[in-house]
Amino acid sequence: MESIIEQFINGLRSGSIYALIALGYTMVYGIAKMINFAHGDIIMVGAYVLYVSITDFKMPVIAAVIFTIAICALLGIFIEKVAYKPLRKAPPLAVLITAIGVSYLLQSVAQLIFTANSITFKSIINLEAVHIGGITIPGITIVTLVVTSVCMIALTLFINKTKMGSAMRAVSEDKAAAQLMGINVNRTISVTFAIGSALAAVAGIMFICQFQSIKPTLGALPGIKAFVAAVLGGIGSVPGAMLGGVLLGVIESLSKAYLSTELSDAIVFGVLVIVLLVKPSGLLGKNRIEKV
Image 1 (cartoon, rainbow, N blue to C red):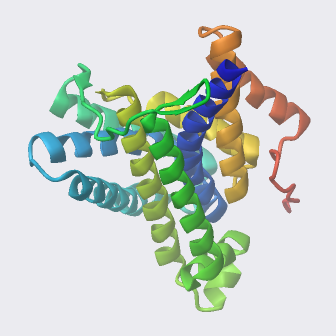
Image 2 (image 1 turned 180 degrees about the vertical axis):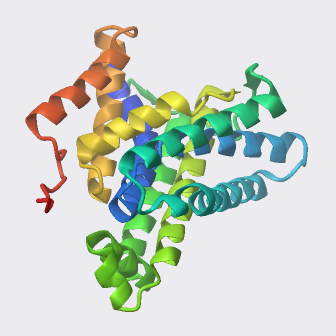
């Protein structure tokens, strides 16, 4: 029984990281109606920025974390302005190809600067494990769950209680009507990219603290799994992204522990196929009727 609970807690840790990344996917899709497949690589950029901040710039940990989040938020705005804004009226296929191009560009730049070799990075989180009965909860798990919970609560309050959050909800419903009501759509979309990229930076920091290794393709697989989480929960739905991320993490952890480590990824993507067949809008997504 203790083993099942420990695997469940491990799943919550991985799932909360997927949820943070999935929030970026779902926010951008909900407002800009596009899939930003370069979002996973923001995780990689955040990991390298944290590494350089601490090892080369000798910054204190807290300052390095804030610096990393700020750089990723600015990178998100830069990518939106340069790559996606000119394509707002372009066919979805053009946006999709551009997103893939941005993803490979970020990976290639990282490879040129840091080479393709993995870099070992010691975790900045050094909290002792907690023992409750026969259950052991690692310190990194506790910190990850606390940090992701705080981020999700803060994001929910921001969207529901602030003027910018109201603007984001209005733009997601009807961009043209929101513009007629005086909402600055360009600024709203830029803020959305900034918040999504900042959350990806937090996810990247938690990710490398867990695995303690950095490489240019670091964000590829977590990014794809987070996209699966966003679709599972209902892409465009913030609560759906959180639910999808947590469910995916738990499914992955239990699959690795009790079925097969090699098959865990296949099971994760199999879940996506089943959801798309049974409920294409996701668990908390809404069916929308599109006029043709």
